[in-house]
Amino acid sequence: MRQTDLMPEGHTIHRLARQLNDSLAGNPVLASSPQGRFAEGAERLDGLTLLSAEAWGKYLFCEFDSGDVLHVHLGLIGKFRSRKAPVPDPVGQVRLRLQNEAIAWDLSGPTRCELISPSEQEQIVGRLGADPLRSDADVSAAQAKFASSRQAVGALVLDQSVIAGIGNVYRAELLFLCGIHPARPSNSLTESEFALLWSETVRLLRIGERMGRIVTTDPAEIGVTRSRMIAEDRLYAYHREVCKRCGSSIEVLKIGGRPIWFCPSCQPA
Image (cartoon, rainbow, N blue to C red; front, side, top):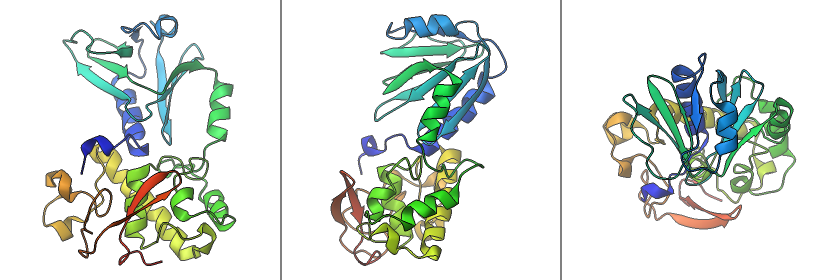
């Protein structure tokens, strides 16, 4: 399994928001753009107080006391890394650095890094679906979209306007754990199947947010705790040749524009 395939998904952004709140919120921050591409925005943020950071799916919103909102989407290769004091000079193409006396956060390679207004934030959030890691997630709205769609489950699960935060890795693993073939029409799911899909999504994203990595396998099946699992043991189906659970050959379909790995034995059509 290639670690480069583990792109940022919703758990990453929620973990990042929590860490930003713990380390920066409530006090003025120094802002700079070592790369220069966000120089104007950084100058506007410099010296402001970060009120809060919050995640909605794969989107990060940082609210400042000026009313400005920093909108970040990491995309496929973006990183937001912390550097503890004494803070070293920026390394690489750092779009934005936020720091205080104790820590600096360096943003590099994002798809989106911009200042927006609260109303623009509302517009972005309005286009997103239920976020399984948020207490205000509208589960019934997500279920209604599944019930009314003939799209393949594997496509709808990736649709951020339906469920916000699931990427290609979680998609494969969630459908595997629920025993759902990725090509099934979404409206063929029973209420109990959707309920299981939602509960597993919440469970796995919470584990990922806590650990800082995607781990879907059951420790009882592997014989070690999640924290001690090697990369090869953390996933059941994604990017595997053989099913981790039953030993059948893993198959690959292209659904929703991206490949999905599944076990034809554990996920019958």
